[in-house]
Length: 219
Image 1 (cartoon, rainbow, N blue to C red):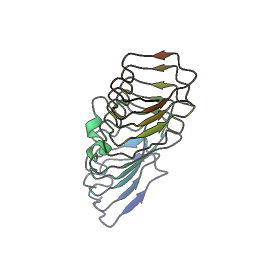
Image 2: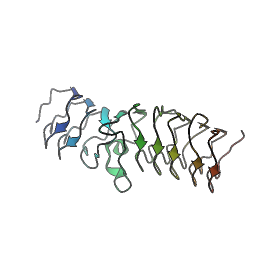
Image 3: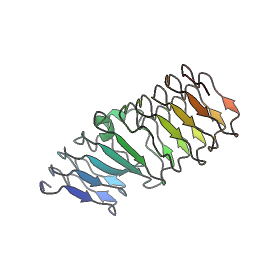
């Protein structure tokens, strides 16, 4: 607590951090919490200079990392089960949302299976292309309004994309040809005004209403 000389903190083998453990460690810039399953309240209060964060997608960090608002890079590991948190009512309390003006790099590791609802909602500056590795499903509004996201290439593990997942994003090209999608749900790619090129999988049997509404598809 209050160790102001720490600039990098690698806790890659730690699974539990209790309350206020690193509170006041104001100079931490690189923080690795890749295997954390339990994070106490105020564990990193006052750590306002963290710019690089590694964290499990299965860990609910709502209001737990409230001091972290200047991230430029976030890497997500699978954590306990690879299943992402549903941030429907709490997306604005995550450190990556609070860093939306500075965050540009988003990495999703291959042990992540599911991106939960609203996880990356309105992160307008994240990198133009994201490697979805072994993702199986993507939640509603997961990448809503991600204006700098230009290209996605779905892996063969991808089986389902929820409605509105990429609505109003900056996508130009969507390659779903290697996926195992059977449906494209309502407004999944709706209002993607720059979307020109789409490749669909052979497994596809249903395209729902307004799936590509107001896009600019030419091929």
